[in-house]
Length: 375
Image (cartoon, rainbow, N blue to C red; front, side, top):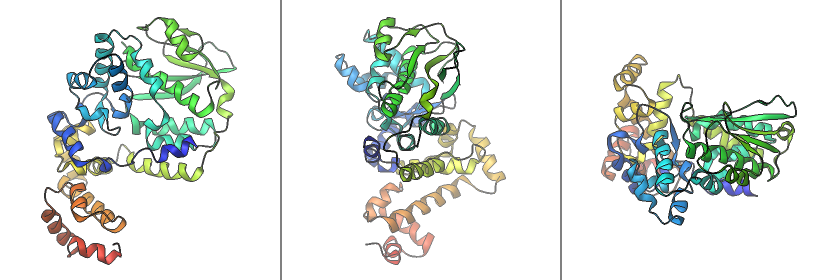
């Protein structure tokens, strides 16, 4: 039942956000791009800060002030799909934990997380047939949620054949940020509880960093022994958990969500598809310039321009093609008003959209909709 609830909890497309909200986020960040993204480091969806605002308010402070202090837009507190720089997420959690004297802030946030924060990836996981299939899907599509985190299964570091280790890597491996690591590893534990039950088979937890809170706090959170000084962060679990079925899984939902994720995660070598993805997901903002797209791809603007030219396509052409395809979809498959369609395509005025429609198809938007039979 909870798996189906996830499907109605969130919108798959950032174009579902109110245009004023997305523009506000973009304008606030300025030259850094959405969510303070620079050309260095990884990114993570703003869903990663779910629960932050609630915990900070419980501690008597204003979460917006902390968000602004690390260079993020306040909108990241309300919209899961805004990409934010991993370094700024780390800074946000560490600053709040320090200023509020809350050493277990990361664990508190993890306790408020659920699978829904993963968007369509949650549907794939929740509707996989077994825990094994769910774990494979999670590792395959984790890039949708963050390109800075890694999750994989490995042999038990203590050599126990009855135990396997789920290793969580992310952030700076030399000096792991405590709060971000606590939130990330804690969420993996929470996800396993939600899929397989509270007693899913956790044996112990090993941390690669010195915790900020007393170990007893960690033992209470995980319900098992917790040790420090490991070479990596692990959840040690019984080997048999991966054979467990996921109750209530619906394969049709899994296929639908997985198909969608594949469109969002093109082959890294396919630069055109990667540019198309960014443009498609930021259309509502308006005209996102090539330098901003290049920053989000972590390459130099001139390099991006040269690669596109080598493929015989221009950035302007890609933008126009994506906008045309999205216009066709909205005009023929929805009953949105022409003004709303125009806004979602990033046009400043409806008249500009009408001119573009005539250029694309020889008729105004009303004509395109009439041909499709959509009212």
